[in-house]
Image 1 (cartoon, rainbow, N blue to C red):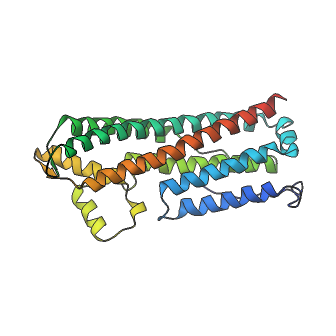
Image 2: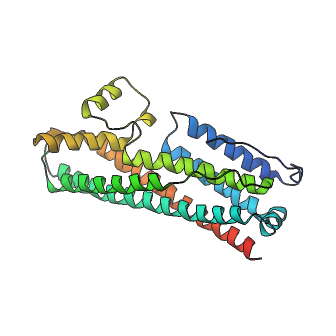
Length: 267
């Protein structure tokens, strides 16, 4: 996705420091998104900070006037439809996380009741994998339906800035969905994951979902007990909780920004 800046002479830095802050947040998040070592949580936190600035950006009288009086109806329709799509993606991601977390807690409960770290092909494991399979199908469809933001219809700096915010949001959400589905690097076997971990590849490059999924799928396919590193499940559950908390806050910011935009357009 090509990103660009348009600084209008209508945005004097001394009068509107929020413009500089928004551009700084955009630049920072683009760098975070491009870095292979950046975690999903750090990207989502950066996105939350970006929307805090975007909402303040929309509060500027100059921008409210520009948006309210715009003749670019295609842009208005696209940005409003885009905001709804982003809310849907955020809700889909949260649903997948919550369901996975519940199934992980069930598995941990089974492990704690045993003296060893071995778990058999219990109903809890089967249910977890079923949940993951369903989530992957939903996420795959969601990724397929995600549309790139049209950047060709902008007529002023305000439209360009808001379009760029949405475009970067789509990019981050695509990374999030790929991480949750465990499809960042395609289909991984358990042995490949072990090799990658032994080579000390950066943690951000391999989804914790992939690690746990591969371990449990191996157990089911071979129909035998497998030594499960309980720390893997604990780490994944902790990560799921962390991502969900950030997503909850981000969802509120997405709603607030959409409401602000609708209020501006209704005036």
